[in-house]
Length: 237
Image 1 (cartoon, rainbow, N blue to C red):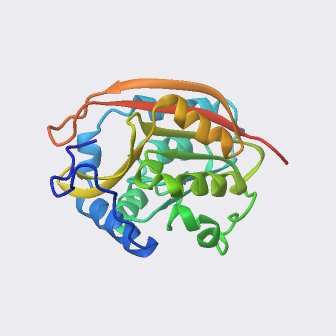
Image 2 (cartoon, rainbow, N blue to C red):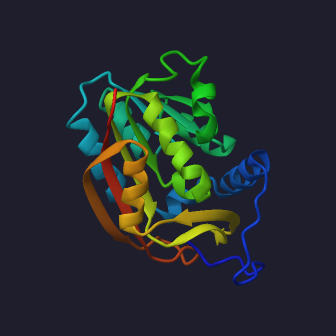
């Protein structure tokens, strides 16, 4: 991601703002980043490979949730162009405006991943057990660990039995740490690969495959990172 927030005291416990305050902090950061995100991360081979993995397993017209859709590139566009019925959610109005321009064939909603069931309740085709697949590419890393298990259970509930999930995070052992990311203050969480797999499996998913990529962003405002991709299936009825 990026360099640690210099205002943080080494060894101190991270602050625990309320959910609305936390969401506002993260949303404001990505409103500020806007189009610069795709400029900093122009090549997204891992996401494209994960999207291709889904497309090989889904018939056209399948309902796919893009949780933390960002600008809609490349994933929402890749899935929508292949005939999927894509619904994207994000907490950043600026990112959503970009996604709607980039992928006019998908539906985009301003929604918190932790409250995605409520946000989708009034949306056609939304709600519990409504999606054949979901993706969460680098959106879970914007949550503290105490919320990631909840988010994964929400995704589990939004999928049909046997539904597919593809997700990604950056491999780093940290929980809710302040960073400057592309010039904007954010809070970031990561896992080592075995720990991430355990968290995903504990949420009711079977991990069918993994992909690991060493990635160098096209900017000095974000250091090289190791990206972890997990392709999964929802267990249970």
